[in-house]
Length: 490
Image 1 (cartoon, rainbow, N blue to C red):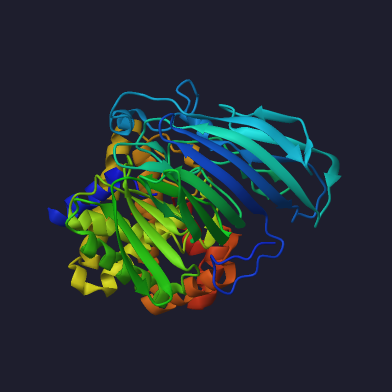
Image 2: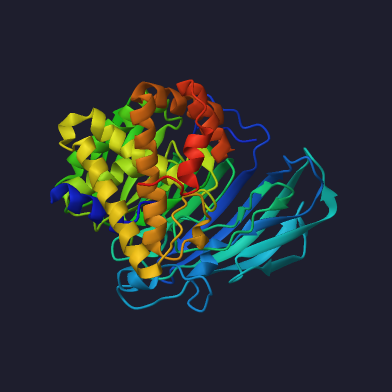
């Protein structure tokens, strides 16, 4: 996700067993899968859901239980972890604060009722025990019946004036690594999500007044009694999301084998220009990093408090992006996330720079190589440099000594500006400095290797450093770690 404030700051400086269809040439073996039945009632703002999860134990250990994230519970108003920081409350809740949540009706294990526990900060975790254990390589069927109540909020999950956003709305399995499940609590800083690739088969029922934007491929859609029933399939996606609106105007164009859909509003005058930006950056990233692996990409204008948000096959663009320059920037940054987060996953909670800094750099690399967009790469980098140096000066004056390390968990950044500057801005500056030292050709070679080697996997910072080192022919571990640890003087 690209924070709204950073867009403004940069431009100030500049101005001053399924049959799946969702992924080409991809195998679905040993991936967990989600079969979901979803029905949305616009009168009550309630989503009724049932998901059947085929879960594989891909670890080397016997599991006694499995954990699911329950992200919608962060929309409770009495929760410890707020959905947005205080500075964004009024823009997030234009009609006053509103509450949302998720309720679990029942859980079944291999078709039998099973006890479950809801725990964690703000009831953000669902724990399901395996009475007989789940051994390595074994598979188990889990059914979860749930209800999600949407808040009236301009956010990943919620209903606004023009759109209804469904991001991070369903129970999703926690990542299992290093002998335990990752149970990270929510943070309003960044994107507190970390997930594995899975397969999705989703049936959506909603009022026929709405148009649907979705990740994955629409396999069928039919109308009956003022309701639309749409089936979506997606292979090898890290998450599933969709958006509903009565106000969408859809523009579509092919980019090679990929259908790109831009969902603007009916009264927009610049949908064609926005679609061209989508096509141009998708084409550039295909050529530069490696082919986008899915059949379609949805770029969706939406009621959203920040600049944008990425999901596999779908990105949300805030309708607060009014100027052509801001809109282009957000579109390009969020589409870059299809490579860095979507296909190549990483731990966004503990190493946010790994996808955000790289997406930010990829955005400027596009402008560097696409002169027709009228943005000067060096001017943009200098603007980011001035922004970061101003941040350091201000924070040193206020706090005395302040941590400037990049490689911290998102909840260890004390403020949103500190998080943004140390992940987005400093991440951009690190990759730019690296490019100045080793050259664009060698840096891109390393990123191509990173994309090829870790597609549909979760990569660590060490994995990225290794690929960049192999691509450049230099040992870059010490160089990059000096940036991550905050030892580099800017």
